Length: 121
Image (tube, rainbow, N blue to C red):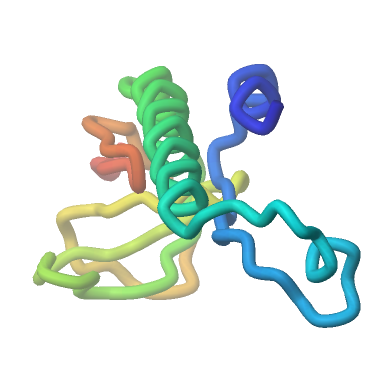
């Protein structure tokens, strides 16, 4: 049912956390508990489904123009870059060093399942 809900709703961001029982809950008292391998397999299935959905949604944005707010510089392994966020909080990596806390218009040039890559428009 969870996979079908994800396919119907098609969220861009999902916080997936593997099940773990908590003392005092109904789940803690269940007799037929799932094996750890089953829990891990389901988590992997949902992660892959969410990445696929996110990539499809992001691909639909290639060529579009968005107002973004710059928030960080030199993200991860990407030197001389700036991270910005759209109004929907989607991360956009820009291959320029820009002032932080400023709004810019960017055109989405390429995407991954995790972020967009934009150029100042």
